[in-house]
Image (cartoon, rainbow, N blue to C red):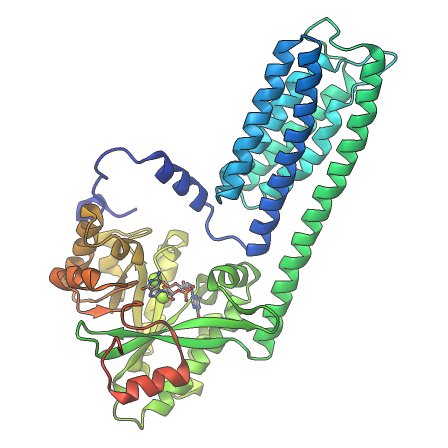
Length: 469
Ligand code: C2E
Ligand code: MG
Ligand code: MG
């Protein structure tokens, strides 16, 4: 959060809408691997359809027998399962998962203790669904905090153990004949076992797909197949003054994989370290080549550096070694760090930044305004540039709050003598608004998308202003 003392974060006018709250809740889990999201959706759809099918049957059965409160309970579960299905189809996967677990657990507890009481003729069997529910909990909560996952799994298993061992009977009356309960028991055993098999199968396929993707990425890094694309950074009149290097990966079967999918995976696996070094090496070699070109040698290129590259063993030293090896002109190179890094250890990041800047390489602060922003820390950092995050640019010029934040960041940069770059500029209205605030350098689809290195070189050399019609 931004420091209130610099007044960047002003309170939002009015209450947030339900949609904003839901979107906020779902996006708070951050970008997750595509295979996981695909399988999570599949699991939720399977679970909801299973519930809809079975409880519809039981609702009809109990209605026929005149036991309307059990019918009402089944119908309530059916409606909730419909809600989960709707959320899963509308990408509200995080909320759908939590609601699914909550309704399943409460329904099983209530019905097992009221209507599925063990007798000498028919055992209790509803609690068997808690076994697939445990697998559901482990899978759906795998990216939540450990404490949340451990708590939910413990509760489900405890309920399973209590229902399996103790003949808890809250209603003290029988809703079904013993023969009907025996048939119900057979159905429950078969369907809970089939459900368990299906969810384990989905889970294993997800794990296989994710590790296959990770393996393919590791192979691509080992064979030097990661690509560096360059996105131009321009003045308002479209003159290219620099670029940001963005990692791209072309999978042999899938084609280009979205960075939203492979960058988080690379971060988690540590592969971001060698992959980031390759991007730095490609850029450093290009900068060295550009020294002989009267146009290209004037440009500055930014390279994204992840926290793993700063803090894992000797990776910073290796990164600096890459720059020396390629004999890249250091003043043309910039390393971009994100604000989120400072939450881990402010002094340590600052120390690393000083070490890098001591080598003559410039430093930029990426996605400014989204994390740990405060004036006091900004003043202490050896910085040359801040980048206004695209989330503030997106809503310009209409959104007063975004406009105020963007203007404050631009003025802050000016006051501290830093260059300010606005990211994610997509249209003329955003450009005009940012220019009026005093911003002078822009990056975004309005000017150009990230381009292969050779295309960027040809474009910059041509001296054309962007956007090229
Ligand atoms: P970032 O460093 O903030 O990069 C800017 C992102 O905004 C890029 O996404 C770029 O394609 C996108 N972008 C640029 N202009 C526009 C626009 O007008 N509209 C919209 N909607 N988007 C725009 P990309 O390439 O998908 O990269 C996403 C993130 O992945 C980057 O955010 C950065 O954090 C990370 N990343 C990319 N390459 C590297 C790398 O080589 N090393 C490391 N450590 N991280 C990288
Ligand atoms: Mg960046
Ligand atoms: Mg950024």
